[in-house]
Amino acid sequence: FPYYILSDSPEGAEKESEITGLPRPDTHTEGDIRKGFVYERASHVTLRDIAHNEEIDEIHDRWQPKQDEVRAKLNEVLGAKFEEWELPHEPGDDWSKEAKKLLEEFQRLKIKRQEEIDASIARSSEQEILYDRPYEDSRKVRVTGPFTVESLSPHRTISVEDKKRDAEEGRDGWTIKELGPNQFGHVVIENLKTAGVQNTVRNERMVFDVIEPYAGQWVHAEGQYTDSDGESHRVAISIGPEHGTVGPELIREAAKEAVQGVGFDTLVVCGFAFDPHVSEEAKRYGKLVVLPTRINADLQMGGEFLKKTGAANLFMVFGEPDIDIERLDDGRVQVEIKGVDIYDPTTGQIRSSSTDDIACWFIDTSYNGESFFVRHAYFCGADNPYDRLKKALKAEIDEAAWSMLYATESQPFEAPETGKIAIKVINHYGDEVLKVYDTGGT
Image (spheres, rainbow, N blue to C red):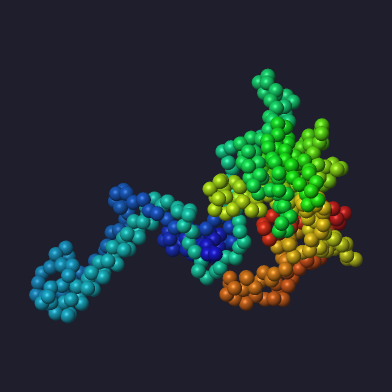
């Protein structure tokens, strides 16, 4: 992909000086992308900008003697007395080569003068920054994977806390208890009917025999599917917020509702993102199988987009990473990833998969419980990703350096002061899981 000139860089300061005509500021640059790029400008020129621009007269005075000198020579060759505004744009048929050359030189000087005046007017006039047109840096290539740009929707999904408070306390004297799915929930249910719930293995998919809305506060739909042995299972479906993260409290409330009465065999909790503590909460409900199911971001694009891309892999069950954490003799910590525990919806069994299914994994070596910072990044998988990278860059990759990144065992690192590390694992479909581990502190 193209690489753009950062505003907070030496190249950016130089380009900014070239655009504005101002001296380059003598300031330290750090290459901070948050300060944006250098963008193209569009000028809004008014008569006031021209009338108050003193530089125009200076430019005119500087170029005028050169033009007068060439015009005088041309008059002498032609035996004429042309004023500046009387000179023709094209030479006559009977003009000599010298006369034609002098007229061409005069026109060139006139154009140069006008270009300099136009540039001066553009610099002094009001500028509108075109944020969709940053300047490219042709000397660099940007290498990146798929990414999304997310923004807040005008539609609001009530949070778990607000929903509980409204049901208990009410608003304006009314007690509010929302039952069943909302508009977004109906969209999810309709797509679950056709797409089912899949893991990372082909043909291992939970296909619903029937699915319909359910008038519950936390369970929004109920369904039924048949496993590979021909046994039928009841499934409760809870749908997380359209714009937000599914937390352990939603899992807890939905699980409590799912085990009431006749009860369900499986609880499928659908969400675009999950809190790292969800996996621990999902293990606490005995015979009830709780499946955190990631919704593909394509679902937010709408029906027309899904018709073009297909409905495959809309709902994915991505298991826990199989991690071995070792405390070394010098007190440092080393992490090895052995695979991912995968749930097979067709049999109800959990098995461990190899690292071939993992595209990359990251470590936050000092997790603060709020934000995940990538401090170690590693790649794995059955293929050799750097072969594709070499083709994309059309350059050689240092395989010795790459081997440090293409690994299932991390480099040793200091034990965190917080006592916790977080590990994020991403598969080849782009699904991710984040889990927090306690290392016992420093």
